[in-house]
Amino acid sequence: MKCPVCGELDTRVIDSRSAKEGTEIRRRRLCDSCSHRFTTYERADRSLPVVIKKDDRREPWSRDKMLRGIYKACEKRPISVDAIERLADKIGEESSATGETEISSRLIGEKIMSRLQQLDEVAYVRFASVYRSFKDIDEFMQELADLIKDRKTTSKKGP
Image (cartoon, rainbow, N blue to C red; front, side, top):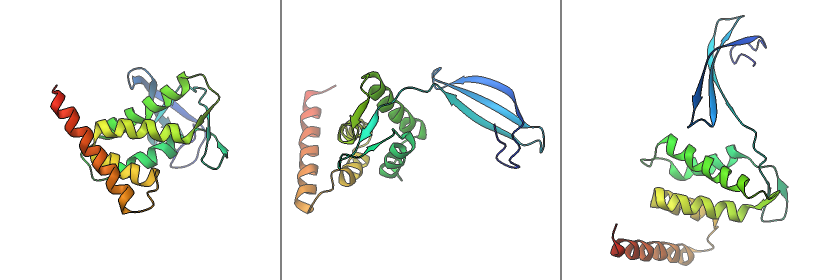
């Protein structure tokens, strides 16, 4: 593993631990050249499907791209980094578990919105406003009205 400080390729592992409920390995490394210590994470390479975009282009699955969108929606909200990471992990696991070689970006977006709606309604609305590309304020207001209606229906059912 390349040292992030000096670029030396010779680094050694000084500690390994299980992380994220056993789905990752956290490794502490030491650069023999500059003595810098740093952490890396290793996770199994799942065969994730190729993403079919709205214009029919195909792109490789990108967890980082998905996370950027989720983080943007959750900006300045009381949502922990762990909760966001778990959300992204779940979407990846669900998408991988289908066994399909391709998945539509629309389906991924819907899964993200469903989980965000449960996590934080403001983050959900932020994500939906970008994802759904509302054409005007009326479409946006309709989405909010649906959210409020769902919320009232859910609160009447009780715990």
